[in-house]
Image 1 (cartoon, helix red, strand yellow):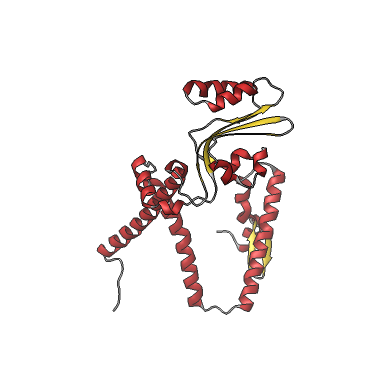
Image 2: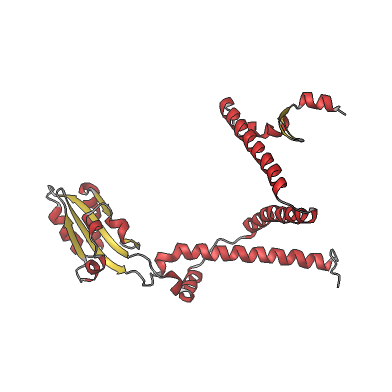
Length: 269
């Protein structure tokens, strides 16, 4: 067994605050985080400063706060519970969590909770194409935007790829209207509701250099309920989180039940 003097030689003190000591071995884990000597030195310096700050804060708090041993023990137990149990529950949930969500589950949750998804913004299904004014293909772009059908959609996509300065042709996807019109003259329009509800589903605007064509296929205004497709991802996250809560509660109940059956605790009347 090493003497205290030998231990101090092999594992020297790096810093101290009162009778609390930080030794070299306490910082060895830092070298595992990087192979760069300069980075290791910076990590060690930050860790040293952090350790000193914690120690002097504990000392300062001890001077100004009266805490009984019973209170301290309770707080330490609560902290230990929170730390250890959190990691255990996290591992248990990851192991047992079913992440598959059926369309029926999503549709049922949407049906039961529609009022929780009231829109705060305007959303649309739309096509958008931005064309340089100097191009002769502007007439074709406007004609194709007015038409509907699989053939015209493919022709429009081909045109956009070859000639458009920018475009969005995912008309089956619901998106925030402001995201489509950003960096276009429509972004400055202060009456977007009137623009969408006037009955003309093709909107054309221009600036000095470009023509902007918007084909609005469908829209939902603020304070309306969005279609299920728009909130599908959000609903999936909610369902997963509910499953996590259920798993955590099940784990706690099972552990309690097992301890009760094995007489591992007593309740004194």
